[in-house]
Image (cartoon, rainbow, N blue to C red; front, side, top):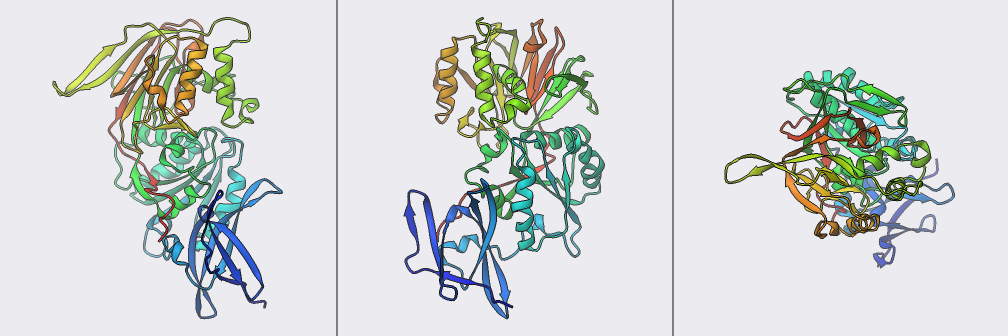
Length: 467
């Protein structure tokens, strides 16, 4: 049997160049040398090699020929001082369910999120990584329809939660998959003794939650969070709708009831979310771009749809969304909630967010902090298409749009919209990327939800500091 090639840290191997920090390793045995970027390293795992301890360095390697990332590894004779914080000497509790510790781990692979990279990521990176770590006991679920994750929650995850079992859910998805879990749990349970822990591996288009948590800082960040992250509660909001509201699915071709939902105190259907609730331009562009044709452009699909909304192909002016918008705010003096009706009845952008960034670099709420539970409203009325584009461009510049005099930006407890639109196209509401059509004369009311039924792994800093 050929002995494994074992590397040692090359003297003076620490480089700082235009590509980022990297380390060089050499093997006198095989006369090989390799350079690995620090940001591509996932972890270092101690291994036994014929009675001697060596270290397996696991990292992501770019397969340029096939335009994909792969998991790769090398063996090290010793742990480099610079990488001591990458050492994974033992599994975190959320990955360890053997022996007397009751619990389970499930992996959900969304096959339609983003450009459909979830299955490839699982096969080429996540599954071999878990194998290196010795994690073998888990169930894998590939989504078969838009209802797969919701059905899994009701058939498997929620019953386990009621039994007070530990659960870890590795979610390879965009915001939609996370929202399905949030909505299912909050629609069914009032409280949990042991909230399931979700490890989000972002494979969607916008990935608002992942971007806001910093999970897309580098390709490895989501995996590092899986190993080093700390569970934190996911704040949510509840959206109540008038009785005739319906989900829009199948690229806008079908309308389905908001089923399996509890009724609010007033007997209306309710939907839960954890990212964003919007009406106006944002909801319209998300709805219009939710097609196979648009999705092939990745995150650029939102920009393409926005251009069509602002510059209609028929040459008309952009639509002015009509409705009464009321903001709910907390009054520190009276220690109660107050209602502020916006003076205008025409709007362009009405969006409330629990997160900071809706996509890479698109910082919609610069004052938001990861999972702080604060809800922020971004609003502006009808302005010229060029002005809208300028506002949106400023959002890509670290959220500078909130300083524009045409933009209202403030913390709220919730809001209510009473729509005054005949055409259904302008009565679409976006809840975490899902689109709901409100009936003529209908309304939507959103408010923060106090329950905390789910955890997500939050990485407090990345990369681990160089020692």
